[in-house]
Image (cartoon, rainbow, N blue to C red; front, side, top):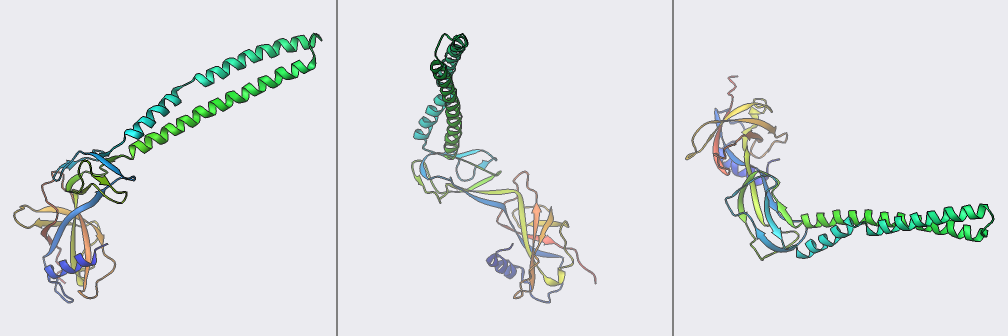
Length: 271
């Protein structure tokens, strides 16, 4: 859960060591809940980046688009094909005409006015047209599926934010090429925030998931905020004699910056 480098750095800041007596507060760090590097499932030339560093983005907001002239043209062609009923209507007209002819031939054959071969020919022709109509209907269904695929391919050339957050880095600009494993911007979710702290193992039974603790960010941020413990590390760090905890801190106004030091008030065990 906790990165080893972050654990070591924070343990040095806190000054924890095996056997340290429980304190009323420990140092902590406020970090983003999620950091997302936004790219696309396909590579391509960037048409336009719609956000810049420092912008607040909402879930689903369009962040960047890739050039998609070819995909849009292909989509228009498939939309035309999917909407067209011409082939099906033509086969239906042929079938109706063939069925009328078949009925006449059957009537004549019943009166022995036409040879049986002509009846067989009329029945075969009707059956062939029925199959051709079924093929035409299948082609239209396939065109609909192709249209759905074209829409999905076009959608892959639009990059949307999956979270509510802040753009903390923009690495590509209009006209640059996005590799398939690359990214355009980095977004940090800072509502909610996460608070990470490392406590001496002697306090392991003093803090439990669901506990509400007070968090006091370092200056210049003022105020005391309530955070809820959502993770306690089940693996101790033997070198420092500590274990990590993570807390959930609501930040609806985005007033608390991430990447900031803080102090975490702990319950003191009088025993």
